Image 1 (cartoon, one colour):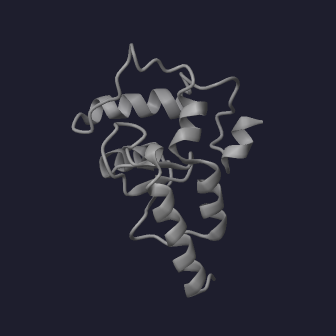
Image 2 (tube, helix red, strand yellow):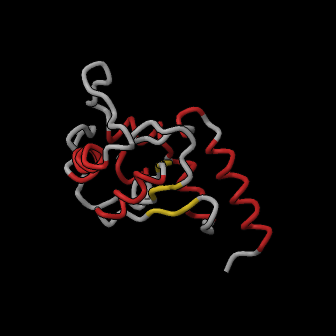
Image 3 (spheres, one colour):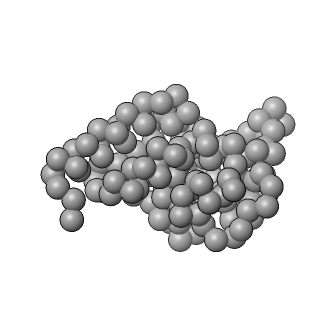
Length: 139
């Protein structure tokens, strides 16, 4: 079990990561101020998208309500929204395609399925097994 000091340190690191420009918005719908982390892909997501990720049995943790282990924090430092975009949205063309609006759950669900389940826009060959950390999918 982690110490109180370690928990505080981890929370401070996560809060710092949330302030980085790529992590200030939900990776799926571009909503401002995501408060959740999808630990399957180490991305910051909003409340609406977190629920849809859970429908696909992706693991989601609230930044404010959950405790993160030091390993999870390290994985998040190696991941984040920019790194996930480089992998899962490599072939995504933002000029031709728009991110779904968070108020349209069906469009968000379709987007999450296309990006993370079907890996439609992913770089190279990625296994269907969710990565333990971002290192596994970039090798």
